[in-house]
Each structure stands twice: as structure tokens, then as C-alpha cells.
Length: 235
Image 1 (cartoon, rainbow, N blue to C red):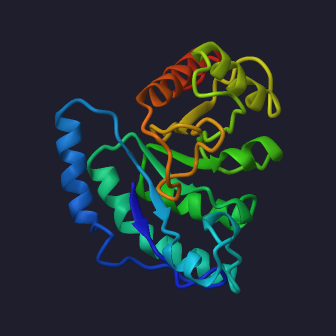
Image 2: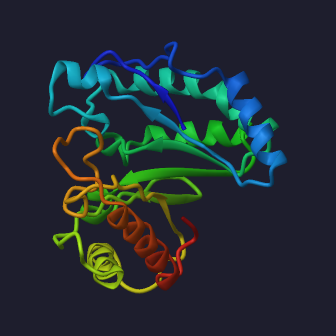
């Protein structure tokens, strides 16, 4: 994963900064990973720093570019060198977008994915945020959809892994019951802190929470159990 940036919630362009690794540097990393026998995915992720500076409620999922044609053209220009690097390094997957709720379903994705497939000849994916995943069934023109799985579960810190897995399944059932063979859990992270089950996406902005490694361990264990039970494509 690597960050890219925009100047605000209504901006019509995206760009790299010094925090964005070049496509050449990404290719070096991919070569090393492949040499170690790892399966690799490349994932551009819109950084939220400029968005939060404008409005504390802004995030990548509610951007509203004033000119969507310009935004998609700018985004295609930015990711093309990374598509080329990923193809040369034989990465398995290119995740063409992540958590862009407000842009999901836009017809411009089809042209972007079509062009991407001309450069990157393997799997093209998209990562949907957990709230969008359970609240609507937006189709994206990609090979598979992953979910960034921050499902909040109202249970205590000492709850069992089975109880936590049941909470995950309740969320997933809002979208579909039974096996989910085309779905990948794209993110399953959780802070190792008290109270994290109830606010799993609260990274770095909570104070006073006690360190709790068992909470994090049970979260990862439950994610693996659910992925196996629901016959998902991966994690």
C-alpha cells in the first residue's frame, strides 16, 4: 500500500508527495517479496491529511470532486506507472481503489479498469469499506471485491473468540448469508487496546486505553475462523 494525496474534499486532482514511494521503489520491494515466495498486492490509498484539515468529518469515503472527469483522468495518470511496475514484477493483484464510498458505482470506473487491464494483466480488485459493504450492493467492474473489515461488535474485552466471530457473521449476514466465495477480507487490523471491539477503526486517535494484546489476538483468530467458515476467497 502506498499513499497518494489531494488538496481537499472537492478537489478534482490527485498527486504524489515525498511520502509517496516512486513506482521504481515499489518495483524493488515487489521483486524482493516475489523472491521470498510471497503473494503480493499493490494498493494505492488516498491519504486523509488534507481532507481532515478542511473538515474533521471529511475522509476518503465522502470526497466530492467538482469535476469527476478530471479526477478520474488525474487518478489514471498517477496509477499507470504503478500498474506497469506491478505487471513487470508479477504482482498477483492491483487494488485499483479503496474505501472511496462516494465514487463507487460511477460509470467512469469501467473505462479506468479497462485501461488498467491493458497494462496490468493479472487480477484487478477493489476494497470497499465495511459500512458501504453492508449498507448497499454497489457493483464495481473488477475481478473481485475485498472488504476493509472494521465491523464494530458490542462485546466486552474478555469475550470469547466464538462470540466475536458471531458478531462478525451478524454484520456479514446483512449483505448475504452463507458462503462468500468471491469475497476477500482486505483489512482485518485492530488496535491492541481495551474497548477496540466496539471501535475497531479508531487508530491513533484514542487516549487512555490500556494495552490489551489478547483483544487483538482474538480479533485476528475470529477473522480467520469467519473467512474459513464462509469459504471466502482469501484474507
